[in-house]
Length: 148
Figure (cartoon, rainbow, N blue to C red):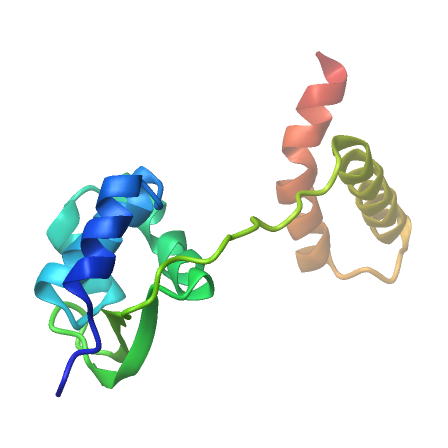
């Protein structure tokens, strides 16, 4: 397989700091060792679970920026599953805009609405006991919040 990479692009990204630290680590590793699966990259960069979770979102971000792309599928050497393989492109990164987060007030309003719906479901005599057990399990932290 012929790789579509550019050493000039690599050096420009490095020199101008065009990628954040985690994005750069993923990009650099793929440039040097790619093509690889997402799990192979994260496993080789760090063996810590928390670190793996911090690298995983970087793949979608780097793809949206145009600096990496999926180049096919194969069995992952770590999981054995059929997954995408990633490699770098010969493009400079485009601007990436992170998804907008929901305002706290809206999150709180939605959570309150969900709680009210659960209370109504709890009060309904037709609700089976196993559903009430699930409701009890998932509302317990909220009950503790309101009693303290």
